Image 1 (tube, rainbow, N blue to C red):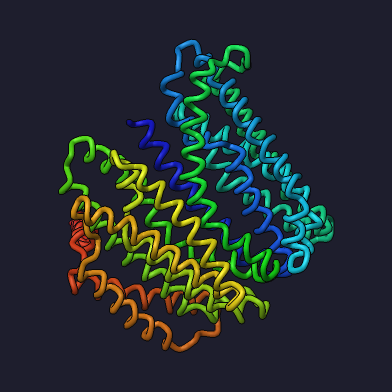
Image 2: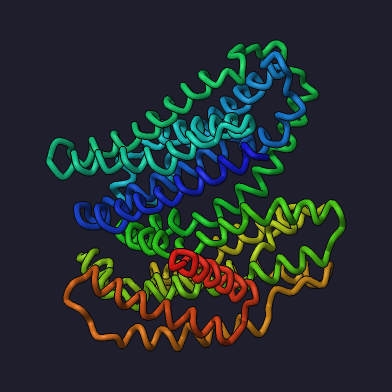
Length: 500
């Protein structure tokens, strides 16, 4: 447990460092030195390669977590576990690549009119998807032997630092845009090779591959589980990314770039949810084991409210600083489409406001319900985007995201309500929304300071202090109030001790 806790702390620190580097890339460098079409191409390649690698993995990422304990042996050969992983991932990539070539005509036809630049890099997707698949498989393999820190460092920090290097080479005219794309693909190879070296150095596996020793029964079992997870998990991941893929086909790369940027900014709302999920999921799983429904309800209610409160503060924080954001982004394509953020932000707020519903269902004996909900997410996303993108463009995709997340979470929330009487909605959430509206008007009407960074600091600080003060005195969250008292007493004790 000590190893897990230590690595969790290190992973969290690295992840937050990665967020900072990500914002330097996405908010400052790419908008300043690349056209929206060029940035859109990069984002489209990344999203499609993600789908490509997910299909190629055949559900192995979760399959490795599930099956490794059953293959693990003291001699580090692990009953030819690597042979199963290599055979399935290679077969999956080959089959997916064959389909990619077979449907080359329809794919190019879908993008040739609105995203011609993407068709010029059609074959670039193959190595990008392969390197992504390689990294994901290696990451899963080192994770099950509790060697997670270096993989997180590579993914969250090194990859983004390498991207910054590439951008500098592009800015200084050492790279053309074409060579920047090739370099960008090569960064995925670099981090994969570094992770492979750690994989070998860990000596947790014997690098001996023998397809002849693969047992058909075990292979069938892993494949069956993998396909189930592919249909369930990939449906969710692809459903969340299909909007960018469809925008590229139906509108063009420029809007892909704009939409991706505002989606990335809005994703800060997810950070508290991810942190709480890492802490709460093991507790929820144990509560299910002990059939402690009241404990799960308590966690469900508290996390839903806290996530919404923090999410609302982050959401209005971006909105009241939009004039500062425009100074950073500069290009009219970004400033003219800020409405996308309003809708995307609301969609994510809907998602976090119902807390850990997916995690609660997935940890229960009724975990298949979560898979069915993911399939609904996928189908709803496609239908809504087909309806709204032709009408409203990028804002239409954002509106489709609201409807998709609403339907997705309504299904899961109703299931938990009907089956287990779990209801995350409370009066505290409505009060939190009212507080957010009040603080928005206050923050938006603070006089502008000519210094961009000083204005951000002053405007955000005043708004946050008022927001948190109102949350504290309305007592809508006992957890937040309790935490404030603990920090207050800690601070006062420190001051008192120093004075003595």
